[in-house]
Figure 1 (cartoon, rainbow, N blue to C red):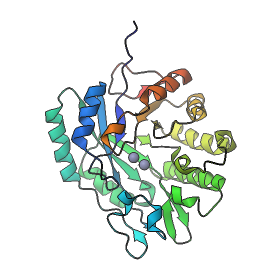
Figure 2: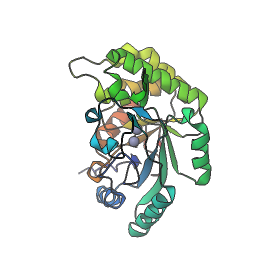
Figure 3: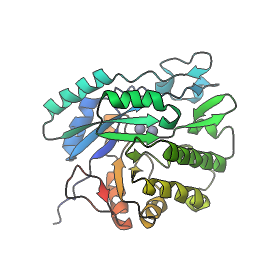
Figure 4: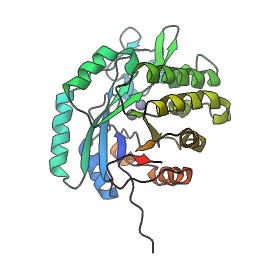
Length: 280
Ligand SMILES: [Zn+2]
Ligand SMILES: [Zn+2]
C-alpha cells in the first residue's frame, strides 16, 4: 500500500481577524490543520484600504456589509494587528506540532503604499500576499464580482489582469501573488470560459512575476485552470504556494489533493523542507 502523500501547508487562511468573515475561527482552523496532518498554516488576514461604492447592499454578502455601508460606501475596518498576534501566540502554544505562520493579504497595495508600508514595518509577517479585488466603475471601485454588472465578462478579466500587471510593476514588497483567477469566481455560468482567450494577458502578468522572483499562488476556491500553471512553468516560474483562502475552518486545505496532483503533472515538486514553497 502506498502511503498517503503529505499535503502541503495552507498558505492562505482567514480567521476572525479578517473583516469579511463571521465564521472565521483561528483555533478551529488549527485543529483542522492538525487533523489533516498539514505541516503549517498561515493566517493571511485582509489588509484593505480600498473603499467600495455600493448601490445595492443586498447584492453583497452580509459578512461584507455588516460593518456598515455609509452613504453608499463600504470602508473595510482596520486590521487589529495586536489582537491578531496574541491569537497566533495562543494557537502556537496549543498546537505545538503545527507551524502557525503569520501573514497578511494586502488588497491593491500599490494604491495604498504609505499605509501598507507602515503596517509591514510594524511587525514581521512570514507570508505577505498581494491581491487585486477591486475594479473601477463610474462611482468609484467595486469588488470584481460586481464589475460584471457594468462591462462585458471579457472586459472584467482583461481589466483585472491589467491591474495585476500595474500592481506587480509598481509595488514590490510582497512574496506571493494571490488568486490570479479571482474574477472567475463570478464569471457568468452561461458563458463558456477559455483561458486561452486571455493568453496574452495571463502570460504578460506571469512574465512580470517571474522577472521579479515572485511566487504564484494555486488558490483552490475554484479549481485553477491548469493552463495558467502550465504557462507559469513554461515561462520559468520558480515557485508556487497552495491556498484554500478559507474564511471558515472546515474549508482549510479544501481541494488540496487535486491541486497537488495538478502541480505535479505540470512539473512542480514538493520541497525537502515542508515549510518551503513548492518549486520547479
Ligand atoms: Zn483575496
Ligand atoms: Zn484571501
